[in-house]
Image 1 (cartoon, one colour):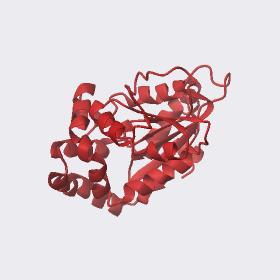
Image 2 (tube, one colour):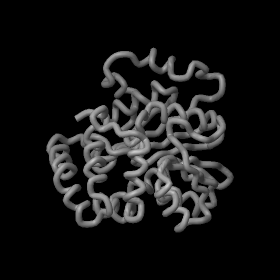
Image 3 (cartoon, helix red, strand yellow):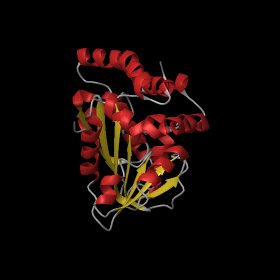
Image 4 (cartoon, one colour):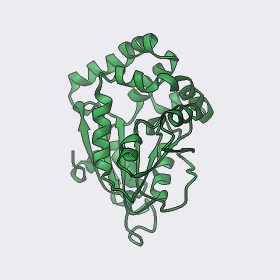
Length: 259
């Protein structure tokens, strides 16, 4: 299955997330066997911001991923396109700045954030490459990007077991605990169809990000990608230079990527 067969209109995806918002965080903990919290902590450590800096947390949902920044006194903007998710988050954490926004057309000025991050949301964006370009636009020169997303397990046997869990066990569990089980069938299929670590790294470079690295978590079930926005004047042609420098098979990027 490819991404094209999974494409939904943005309003359809937003409605789907509105429906699952009330139990979304609890269901995620159950389906990930408790790993979600560990993954999110690794993302926060990778973003590595300090009080006085500003962070964009894109696809923030109910704000669970934004809370560590707010608790540390960091100015965080929790942005999501699902009003249902934002309402649940705002009720729980009124101190966090929740903003409704489309990842492909962010409602922020250029160079607004010291760092941008998105966890488990990029694959649900209709045009993920546009989202990468938009995050580049709103991040300050020299600023960081951190992406956590489901990826391709690196051990073949583990990959087979993981795929079986996604397509059989995950929907079955969702029926028991989720408010909209069909949404989790879609999410499972979107995970299976998502590009692997090297392809996402290539997208980042093509979008104009530099110093692209990634780290596999839980055997590659999740990968955390990191990148930096070029300093002002060093990459005026956006991603064109990156594309020219990295023509050919994605595998050739491996030498530039730290696992």
